[in-house]
Image (cartoon, rainbow, N blue to C red; front, side, top):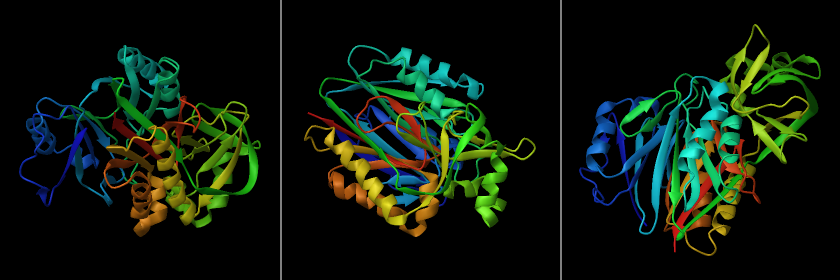
Length: 378
């Protein structure tokens, strides 16, 4: 496997004049701010440089390039697989209710002999990530895992994009299928947040919209806990996610708010908040967040069966970035320490992460985690 990375910004232009893998690259991952992806000249240049490659990417709340975390740039990672092939499928989503069907359709299009892994990149505001993951999981062979994430837009929550080729669009979902018996893929996802306050019962919800906790307005309760932070909703909610547990959830998951509706007293999350589950507020623990990133990398490395990874895709939640602030690159460093110096690191800060739990191939939507997907060829 061969890789190379280039970066672009409106002020500095491209980091180098010409790439070295113009004809060899089969896949180009493009992660950037919405403004960068909407710059037609930047994406068009990527298409000209890599005419034989499929270009897939999304908007971010921060771009990961090697050991650095950047903002308002476009990070391009070109990949050549020696012994593996890939295929891209994409679909437009009318609204969140279409999410399951979209996942099912993408799974059906990619489900072919030799499929090893699927990576999905989704609009971050108009898609129910839980239903999307369900649609993919339930329509792929059980050994095939799915990882990926929901596109971001910094702290703005206004405009998220997915690009297929040189066009970036809202309400788009793209999935990459990886094929080949010599390809090894590892994955891991961990958080590092601490719970606080009483556990409350979800007494009224619909899909990813939460109305009541313990029979009271969920939004009013949440605001009381946030205090002064409530004035900055929904962005301040990234600092205080909800942990959910219940019979309908495999283990526990974390959910982050995408929007609030003052008139209905409701909160919309990136994934489902099932009625009858129990919810508890969470807050950040700096050291545990960084340890969680290292833990995700260790799990991803263990799945490679002693092969050293050549490429690692890191998808971390925007809430982690807001909490870690100037320490944000420490979680990237912790991943590097685990994976070793040979792995190319690329990725982005997201509005949600998709990955199986540790011991399963069944993908779930997560929030506030670092998700690491590792690739190696034997």
